[in-house]
Length: 243
Image (cartoon, rainbow, N blue to C red; front, side, top):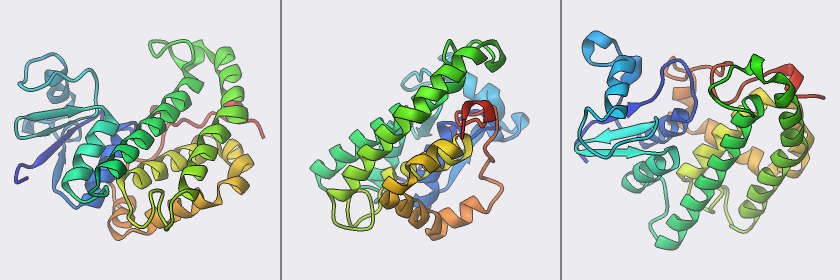
């Protein structure tokens, strides 16, 4: 565990890379956010693309985020977070809890994918402006049905465990990921989130507990935290978030 961690994700957006950043920050490990570093110092997007094109050793990632640790190349956001968590105490020690944690992380990844598809329902290769009519229809269904379905599920998960965190007494990387999802929904769908807020008070309390964690609080106040914007997964288009 002496190798320095290198995170590869697109610069300028939080995206799926933010889930990994939050885990790394709370773990308190040193890491390089490679694509945000100067190209002449071995960083930038060219360094990221070198892995995607197969020019570098290790497992071939399909897309960022991926983490390079020594000879390991670990891709898929939930997978990377689980890897970091098992090394740095961000998940319980017993196998049953670890399996459950990964299950919930993957379910959150499903929610993230659906949030993305509200503004790109036809295809990621098209601009939002090319699919606005379809986006309005997709977003209406997401806000009316899917936000509540997903968050209601996680509220039930929380209620099954005794303690202040999603899995009970110990905070985990899933709490960090849940925080990021709630922050993203608050940015992209403030009306949609407000409509279900009365039924997810336990999740909202976890959100505030994560925000108050010293390392997370320091990160959120730093310039390492990229603001939400309309190039990322969670985008605020007022026409997609009807009151």
